[in-house]
Image 1: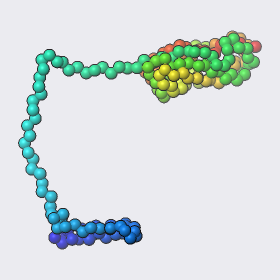
Image 2: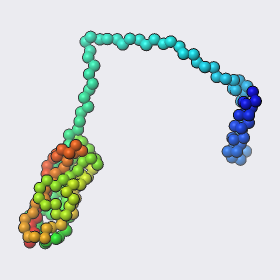
Image 3: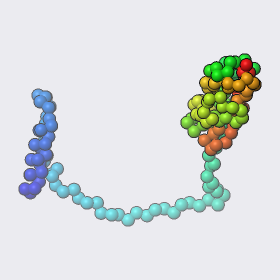
Image 4: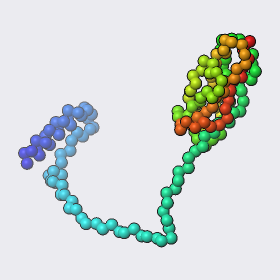
Amino acid sequence: MRLRTWILAAFVLGLSACATQDAETTYFISPTRDALAPIPSLAAQETSIPEPISDQNTTSQPTPSQACSAGLTYIEDISIPDGTVTKPGQKLDKRWRVQNSGSCNWDKGYGIRLISGPNMGVPKKQALIPARSGTQAEIRMIFTAPKEPGVYRSAWQAFDPKDNPFGDPFYIDIVVQ
């Protein structure tokens, strides 16, 4: 009995130390003797689990989850049309409008890679701009024209998180003079 009284006193002191000085607040309501009585333990009861009902005509098979399909459709060049004449070493702000024509949303697992031609100062791998299925997106790369005169084409392709290429390739096509 002394232990309960000591625990109760410590609890009351703890509460009073944390309480605010609000005149309308009730800080503590003393428990009744019944509240301090031990809680009776619940005895384990035997419970029977019914057997599953078997139906000979029904077979349970998991429903396969339908995977999305990746797609990219090239729409147009926004800047730097094919055959644009440039100076050696010139910075080229190339933009393409594409559509996410697949059922997958492009997220951080999707990327773009150089598939042919020179990279012209752009990393050969980069992230594909996030786009929800069915929406259009703008892909932008800042190229540097080669120093040697000639005709250059740098082609790029989208890749899914499993490293599979998908969609239309897109490219920059320039003439350095």
